[in-house]
Length: 248
Image (cartoon, rainbow, N blue to C red; front, top):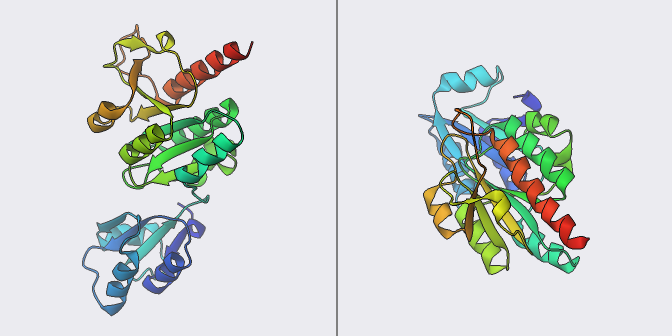
């Protein structure tokens, strides 16, 4: 992490938050106390910014500067709202096409997914506020700049995002090895969203339960799962293929 992607010190972090800067997460020294720290947590109240208590040694490893027990990691892009994206896409006369990432934490996979999604005409990528990848310099580099173009929505939870999409007329498909149907056997008609999970855990059970359908990518080898960026590319371009066939 480059130092220009971090903000050090309690007062500087408070000012960044109050200025509505895009803060991905904040690391706080485990035993941090004092009036200024109380002010920091007061400012954080009601905001969807993950805060992690860590040993002072971890903060020291990140920077040699006087961090005062607090380091904020800044986002490299401005996040957008799914509630703004969906009406905008409809107003353009298009069917929304959204990709949601449930628990994906690897920045290079995220960047590769964003690159594919931008090339395929996906309208936005959705990530949760907590337990997810962040848009940093590595992600942007891997995306070949796609993350400067493709909207990224950081929502309170993937579950809430799925429900909102369904209420907005979007059919939500989850990728799961537990699915009965292969991905090519399903019709991706009209507004579509695809939910992809982390390689080790997949889409969470609570999110699988509320999706409209589950699909799987058949595997014939001995390795347990596909790379998540590759799996996303396969499903995204199946949607593209079907949409192109409908237009012919």
